[in-house]
Image (cartoon, rainbow, N blue to C red; front, top):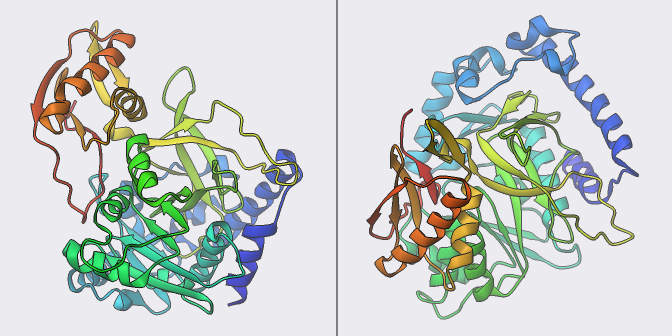
Length: 427
């Protein structure tokens, strides 16, 4: 409980006078963390005394190949997978623990399922940071609904005192979970972009009352401009975003609605994806996680650089770096031919091009299914508009030989992440 309260206070009230002070503080946190990890993780033991830049770049494949040596509790991957899959299958997530360690399973949208671990103290720290950064105020009772694919004991850590927590299992029929949500009447609604769209479309359809949240938090999937417009039109309350994934609580919106890295929790390095340095994939070092160290972990996500300033209130100077947008996954970039060269077309450029052309909400999916062959899945009446939007974008990129085909509106599965731009080719 002490860890929760301390983390809550730091997340909500701790400030830095400038970037230099923040970076000095981060360097000290990282140094202490690496010293501890190299003493307790067999995988990192040989790096004792080394600086962060000497540590290898990590990703999901490398982590899972070395999981037994990497974690600091001597836990075996095979046993943990068995435990996590059993919890997923039976939907009894309270049993997904071993000793004091919560075991979770990632969704596998990158092509490989992964494990994530958190001990009791790490769950308290996570809860404190979540509450500190996301609660609108401290003077009222909050009813928090988490509308996601899987539950975890880690989420119930926030179910304390004036905070009422309800997990909504979206793998159930929509009539079941939407009725449960309407009855709970959340003040804070947290879910994936796909789940939030369903909430906007179906609240009140299966019960006598509709939900009227005071704040909405979108996470786990890309929230496109069109998706945000639909949700905003229905609920007419602030919509914030969090960057929460298997690798940690990485980012959240500030009081002015600007998404920022949680640099009081993680240290960010950038792997640039283009010469213009407008997009990068982040390399994460979380200096709070010890059970399963996250050190120089390169995500497959595409992050757009913040290109415009955000006017700050004079008493709310935030030195944490802003995020322009979470633009999708690197593996979802279209790779189209231009004079024999593969030219990447980033997902957020596609979202923007389509949102400019469409005047109403449209459910769509853009898939590269072959070399210079793009499939548009949507209502047939929207095919022409979306094709025009993409043609204009591709022409700007000097791409003139793209072939289009068309398919019916996509049918999303709530058990998996919604991906509006997908590259299905193997080059």
